[in-house]
Length: 493
Image (cartoon, rainbow, N blue to C red):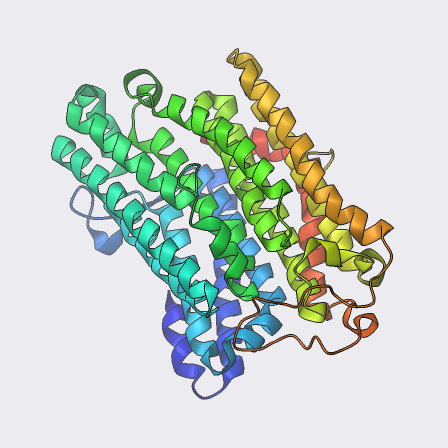
């Protein structure tokens, strides 16, 4: 938040200061998140009353194992993405770099605030901060991005309003907005109709923010037409925090079993999650624009998180939390890779990736690792979260979960391996068959250059973060048991 205030002022004097301050802000937040996780592992949950006012009057911030874990994911991925998209930001934002990085800092402020708050209304405040910043960042793309951003604004506003309405119902029933106190009071008030209605409103609102089918209509266009410096940032982390907020409702707001036995929220999430896995995967298979393909892929992968939640078991929650981490890393690797390809060649169509594997070995190598993780091939990280989801389905005797999750891996392989086949097995085309039709109005890719010159490895400040994210998908897969045993399993108890 401090960086968001400083960036637009200093960037008026020197544009470079916007990037430097933004990177320092998110970098220090990343360090603080890692320190918080280490502290909580050794000393237990941290609590802080804003302004010294204790709840229920004041706002409490709570950093437990799960909050610290997700904060590390969001801030670390955001740090690498901001480094890797600096050249895109220069090209797309032009003389508005100060405003751009200020909005980026507000976006991350909202996301991290949602993670660490222990207050239901304060979560709404941070939800709107991140959403408003996200709308404005998408609008920067101009043209079709304006329509995509407007659709996102309308649906996002509906989602926020529904969440706030649900919080109002809970407040009327409990007299508090503190999550911990709400859970204690709801043990006695669980059968109240107002509480049941509040739960339904909250999860529909968060479902819109999470892009859960059938509330996903804003996402494909937003990811496709937003500037590359924007979709590369929001795709890995924004919807994942909405999913985390859902998990927080299960863990910290509603009594154990309430969302499964009293109000069938878990069953609804299970059905919508299974539907979303199939819908997202099938839609991704038919896409020609790789950004749109990855957008529908995100819908499918987010549905896996919903399935873990819907199972309502400890192992299901572990699968959901682990997939939040895995999807954030592997989707950032994929978007960073295609942003690098687009930066040097203007390529956005799947058919035009022919030969890029030989011309851009490091970038496409990172893309390959991300693709293998998405499919769920060990030891890449995506395999393990899907495996835990399958195990949770077997434990709950939900065999349809086992079938759909396994089928999702096959469907994911169909559309992602199509890109890998083109990149590594097809000869390089003399020139891209499609121009960069939706490039930002702030700076166009020079498509008049010969393709042999265009398709080359991106600059190091783009390539290194991309490769690191690709390698992270393997490292996190290898050490998944350490994360599950030491962080996730103790965190959901």
